[in-house]
Length: 379
Image (tube, rainbow, N blue to C red; front, top):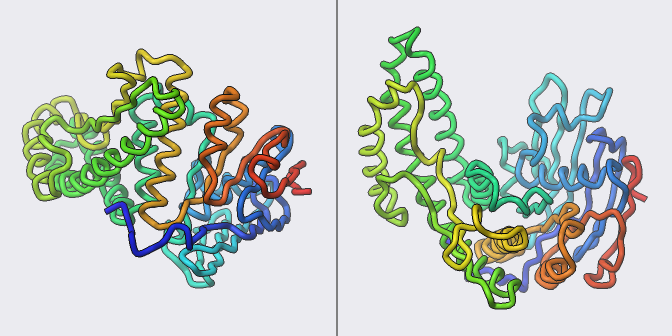
């Protein structure tokens, strides 16, 4: 499921060759050609470093990692924005373009052919590592679910489709339960949305379980190496209690989930809340058998977060035969020298973008090119 032996990782290098921005955030008009190995983006805060990475993520995933809607990304006092990237992936050249406009739906194209929302995700993949990701272990379950969803939506189109359908059904069911006291007739539609949540929820559990199994495999190695062989990291999937075995086939998962929904139907009607389902899933991360979220030190949780992000990158590589584009947004400045060295020693093999306030010794360590950003201009 996660490997493609027909594709040689050594023969394929996914990369972003060129990016053009017009009216995007604080970039008025900018064109830049990147290094195929490493591009270090330097500049003071609030100059446009993160905006540049946001554009690269948007063109890979069809959505921003920080904006709530497309309008937020259009430059101040402008009516439209355009993002264009020349990309090499799967031994082919692609041109991906996004046209954003106020009051009009966006337009995405790949090689001038229109694609549906999110269709650009099928061209190249990105792993974005931000300072807030260092708190991935200690945050609530919603943050870890977002981590899973972001990764799996890029890996598996079927997962992305199931997640969108499940979310719509969950939203409708929540609305019905909330308004049912004033409008009892709404409850007539409840079984249909519960059935949809069962059908699509089983698909989510199927993929999440397998992804977490691979995640643990790679993350455990990274964590062990970073801790000098002293600590053992484990990851367990936590889902609906009625699911006896999350690794079972989708048919069996559907049966268990349906039984669970039926058993909770009256309680949900009484509370007017969607009490349980894959929308409450979580990952339990332990270090030496102890729950990391509650009992681990800051250094241990940061090492575990690093291990998860590097493991995500390895899973992409084995699934597609190419390393994804790795984006490190001011992460290194948040790490001590030991963990900085650990990350830098493990990011070779694919294209990397690093933002920082000072270029320091990064170019000499990684090779590549340095770009200086000031007030939305790349010098």
